[in-house]
Length: 288
Image (cartoon, rainbow, N blue to C red):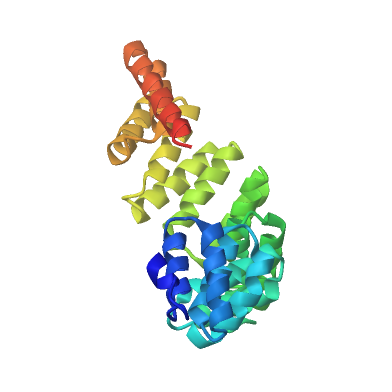
């Protein structure tokens, strides 16, 4: 490639290719320089333009990335959806929420002013760790369409993140009314009841979750916690052993198994599980 670069004039597309190689190697500073040269050589090279925007985003410069992504978005959006997504995320990061909502709506083929569009923004903002703005979007979605599925679910998640169990229960109960066949709703509601110390309600809700989500470990783990709180270690053990068979690398499951074994007087089994939980947790921290 260097020998080609020495040719005068330099072959068309060479700097873009160099930039792609650097980008794939996560060498973003070099990729950015190569894409900059490619654009100087050919101002109509929209792929180089888009990739420079994506590269700047990966370098933590969303505001600088936006003009390049905007320029390339419309002509080649159908060819490279990644650039469109990155443009929307850049808008989020610089708090241009209306623009982000418009881009996401285009991607998902929904009206930008619909309740679904606002709810989608709420979920994306929560993922980007903007809980206050996420709540605003979810409430706007419900204002437009009060019966919108999953909006109360998001509000309940936000309430749980603030450790407001009572508010979470109210939101999840509202979601259950709208969306009674969604197993996640019962799992989240059971979690909220557990945190609100409503153990009987939690057990009932989590049993409903199990019927709808038999292959999910979440309800089994939560039922184990609830039953330990209700001093039923033997039944808790059965649920937790089922969860362990489904996900043996979950440190919380082993921690709860240790508690169940200890409550049943099985000290050696309890010690083994506590050690396993500690080992898994330490291994996870070492990988960070």
